[in-house]
Amino acid sequence: MRPVRTLAAALAESTVVLDGGLSNQLEAQGCDLSDALWSARLLADDPGQIVAAHTAYVRAGAQVLITASYQATFEGFARRGTGRAEAARLLARSVRLAREAAGTGEREVWVAASVGPYGAMLADGSEYRGRYGLSVRELERFHRPRIETLAAAEPDVLALETVPDTDEAEAMLRAADGCGTPLWLSYTVAGDRTRAGQPLAEAFALAAGLDRVIAVGVNCCASGDVGRAVETASSVTGKPVVVYPNSGERWDAGHRGWHGRSTFAASRVQGWERAGARLVGGCCRVGPEEIADLARLRTPPRRP
Image 1 (cartoon, rainbow, N blue to C red):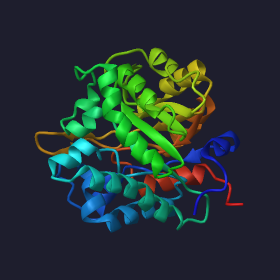
Image 2 (cartoon, rainbow, N blue to C red):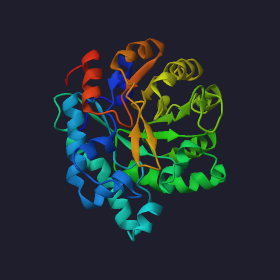
Image 3 (tube, rainbow, N blue to C red):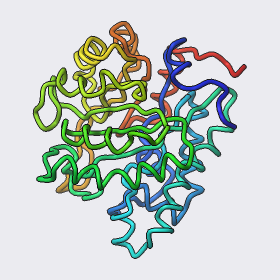
């Protein structure tokens, strides 16, 4: 069931709760994600697991589900021998699966089609560095077909997420121009700069005058970096701010495991709200339990 209101209208009324990390929930369900396509592999191999993961977040109180298309690209699928037509079908399936799970809730649940950065397709961690040696025009050519395919599947919003630098943000915004779907732009950051080192004020300014951008913010970052980013995003753009940080644990690529402890605390959201956050959730290693804590702090309106 499609929501009655647009997500932008909902943001004008109250804070909206996002879901948490899709990959960690899939792993909790027993899925093997040791593939270059990561969770996107399951779009072809086991779509029911994706519906189950989305549904777990709906039951936890999430009002926005982010699709399993973060690492799904035509180029990535081609490396596994998947043709372009089938890849387009799988991208569209990511939206349909999220919509299926959204219909299991008692409240309005919106679907955000995930558009990950170029580095996610490379599957080598370069989305946390940016500056791939490609021009804005080359990055735009990479992103446009996927954005157009996802938009044609009619999500409620496009999530341009985990963007490491302003060049890629500019390219993604250009690629989304004219697609007819509202979007949010979310950078991955370290301290008060993008992962590539640009000041956040400069990064957020790219979206300041664009009506199709309904929110700007940060994701896949430390919780401690969120507060300053919210203040900057709100003051520079005047738009609602989207935030979904990681748990705080650290990924050790050599040992392929997580280390440290979680520093994600739902209680922080109230401070973020005061600074302008209106879309709040979690990213890597934040699961349904933490999203349920957020939902209890933010009581959303029920469906009309």
